[in-house]
Length: 510
Image 1: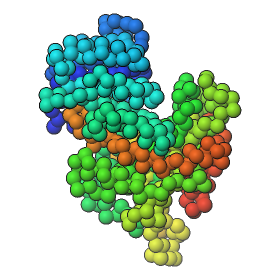
Image 2 (image 1 turned 90 degrees about the vertical axis):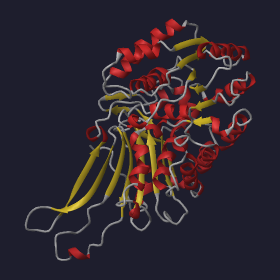
Image 3 (image 1 turned 180 degrees about the vertical axis):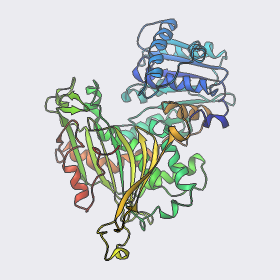
Image 4 (image 1 turned 120 degrees about the vertical axis):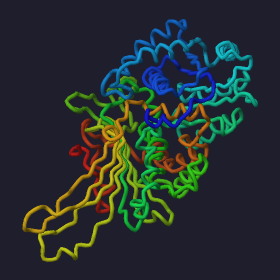
C-alpha cells in the first residue's frame, strides 16, 4: 500500500500491537518504519499502542530512544528498503510516544501473566481490547509462544475484542514439522486468527500481478499453454549470509525462499481467475496451483554453495568460512528447480525457479516467454530467427513491467530488432519509499487474510519440495560450488539447455 492507495482506506479499529523479539533487526529495520509510514498516511488507529517484548532489560524510555536513533537512519538512507524520504518529526513523535517496553522470558509463563496486565493498562480496557501479536522470534519459539499466550488467556476473543497472531517464516522446516506446527497452533487459535506473513506479498508489483492479469483483456487470453513457452522466476541476491551463519546452516536457500517467497510468485502467475477478490476465493485458487504441481524430482533440482569471489567490487569470503558455518557444510546458498502444473491451462509448460545469495546482481523477476511466431512470412529475407517475446514483471530492485517484442530495423533490408517497452512504478505513480510491510500489518489489523497463507497452502508447498530435502539429507543431491559474483553453478543452466532453453542473463540486464 502506498500513499496513493491509502486514499481509499480507513484507519483500523483501536488495537494494541505486541511485538515479541522487539529488540531484533526486523523491528528496527522494517516493522517500525512500516508503522511510521502508516501513521504518515493516516492509517493507524486513533487508539493505538505498541508493546515491545524481549529478554533485554531496559525501560520504555530507553527502548524509545533506541528506536528513534535507528529508525530515523533506515527511513532517510537512500537505497534502503525503507529509505530515501524526508523524516517527519511530528509523525514519529506521535508514534514513538505510543511505544512501551516490557522485558520478558518467553519460556516463563509468569511473563505472559505480566504482559496481560500491561496490555490492560496500555489499552485502558480491563479485557485488553483488540490485540495483534507479532512473532518476530526464532521459528522454534512459534509453537511454545502461542501455547503460553493461550494458557494466559491472551488469545480469547469476544464480541467486543479480537485477538490475532502474525507468524514470520519459515513455517516449519519440512512437511512433517509444518504439519505438527499447524496442529499445535490450531489447538490454541482458530485459522482466522492466524496470519502467516510473507513480506513479498506486500510489494506493489506482486499485488499488481492479479490486477495486471485479470484487469486487462489484452493478456489473459494469452495466459496459457497455447501461447506461453515457459516461465522463469528468479530471486537473486548480491549479499551473502551477512553474519546469519547459524540461521542459514539450519535453513538453507530452499527452506528459506522456495516454499514461501517463490511459491507465492508462482501461484499468483499460474492461478485461475477467482470468482472475486475475497480472501478465501483468492487463496483457494492459489492452493489449487500447488495441489496440481507434482512433487519436485531430484533430477530437476540443483543445489549450489558460493565460494570466495567478488560481488560488485566487494570481496566475499567462502560460505564455509562465514562465522558459525561448518567447515564442511553442505548447506545450499543457491537452488534451482524445474516444476510443471498438471492442469488444462499449463499442461506441458515448464516453470523454472532459482534463488541464490552472493550472485552477480540483485534481481527479483517473473519472466514469461511467449512461443515463437512462424517464420514462413519472412522467406527470402535476412530474417533467420524470431526475436523472443518476453513479458517481465520486475519486483527488485525497481518495481515495474516490461514487454520485449520484435520490430523492423530501419533500412532497405528486412531485419528484425528487439524493442523493450518499460513501465516503472515509481516514475508513473510517483510512489513513496515503503518497506512492503505496511499493507500486511494494515490487513492484519482489519482482519483481511487475502495476502497471508493458510495451513493447507503451507503444507502443499512443503509437499512439493520434500523430495529435494530428502535427497539432500541422504547425500544424493550435494551442493555444487559457484563463485561469488556469478549467476550460480553451471549445472543450473542444464535444467534449461536440455529442454532447448536458457536462463535470462543476470549479467546483462539493466
